[in-house]
Amino acid sequence: MSTVDTHVFMRPSAAKVAALVESHSLEAAIARWYWLDKRTIFTLAQAGRAAQGVVHRKTATRRAFSDLDAAVCVEASYALGSMARGERASGVPHNSTRGLFPTRGLDYVRISTKERAQATMMGIRAKDGDTDAKANIERRREHELAVGEVLRRALALVGDQPATGRYVLPPVDAALRESLVGLPGTAIGAVFPALGPGLAPAAPMPSKRERAVIAAYDGGLGVDVLAAEHGIQAGTVKSIWSDAGLSGRARRARLKTQHMATPVVEAPVHPRLDNSRHALAVRLARAADRAPMEALTWFRADAAASRHERT
Image 1 (cartoon, one colour):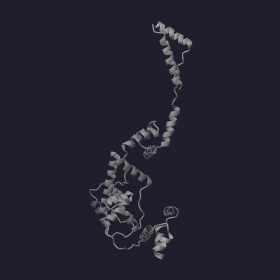
Image 2: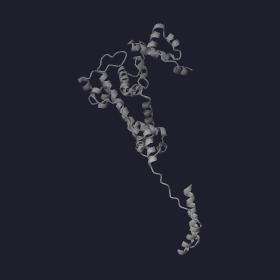
Image 3: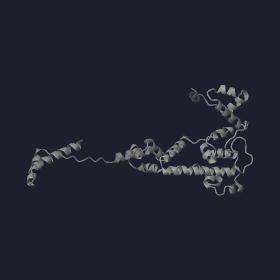
Image 4: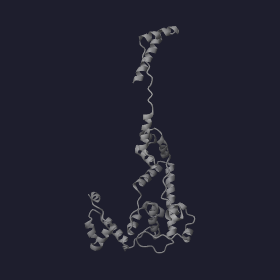
């Protein structure tokens, strides 16, 4: 029932939870929003306080990364569009950002549903041995690490950081330019657009299979046939075309128009031999010094051909 409740009831804002915890206690907030678990209520309250600049003081716990690692992780998540990418860029353990964001009063950074589906398909193709997919994933990982290094050098130039909210990056000046020497321009541009070409993670390079499906767009094969040829679902064929900016509806309209414009050529129908033609065939066989029975063989073959053409 708790799962149903979370879909039925409206999720409270972090500010509202923090206000109730402050005025009446955590237990009151748990009772008020009973369909949420205690950990979620605590996280919302913490995020609400952090958004107001109030730092929650608690007993220090040992963690496997430094404050600089945490700063790189958060800012890389924004630069790359995903918390998981930020973790890889900074080298912190997986899921560490789930604690870092609410502590600073920040919303989680997530990729879109479409991007997630594309990333999943890319991983599946890589596991199946697709060299293009493997190369694309490797290129993304290299870019993530480069962005992490840009942020690490840049954040090291800043003294005190605010306890809540986004981390402060240094101004674009000679000191920053000098510190970033040797790093890829695409990674620099992802963090500091004024210093290099900005790069939202680049669109993945189409695999061999995807290129073949895209090339077949101008052909006349049906979607189901193409899907069977390449061992994929018909919906995947349509998705590949859509990602390439090709319209399945426009293709169907084109094929329909071509089909209507193509003249229908009817196969010639050979008339069956009647008795008079049969007699003529016998006379011709004798004139050609052939056995008369050959005329009957011709007649039967012609009759069989006529029946086959009609069916």
